Image (cartoon, helix red, strand yellow):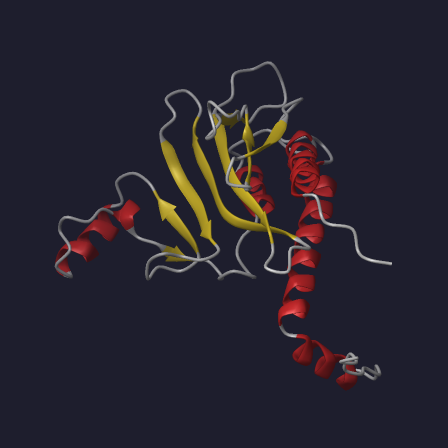
Length: 225
């Protein structure tokens, strides 16, 4: 029986639903993350996203009717992997900002195939950081700002997740979470880690097979026939 063709639209919508569940189970109430299809075949994911407004809006981080102090901007691009089987994030940006004026504090950026020399997964720190600026100045980069720095954060497979950013906001007492937030967050983060592990095994099955043999499993290479 032949394998059915994966449906990017459906998988992207499922992924958007998972993000909605993660946020509503931790630091928001009733928000809905959506997925839309672009004419080039990619899927875009975000809050209040549409064809006319593809970058969407920032999510207010509040579980009540009280005004949010912080917001979270989610922009994520999804495609199928090169084998056209599994959902893959090709680009994402998660930005924490003050909700009132929208001034950003930090941004996690990820680009699966960078078009420059910077690491695929990196962090930007916004605002005035005097010591960083001092380093740039003495290194001959007076025209650069600290926000221009791309701080590496683990690469393609070991990059921080949205769950890590949400946890940061909670543990630093920047937002008010739901009482059982940790259960939702850990379940979502475990799912992300398993997905990354599965992707690593697909890309390096020999190492996976070697490790399984080391712990007593029996593994054989797939048949070419």
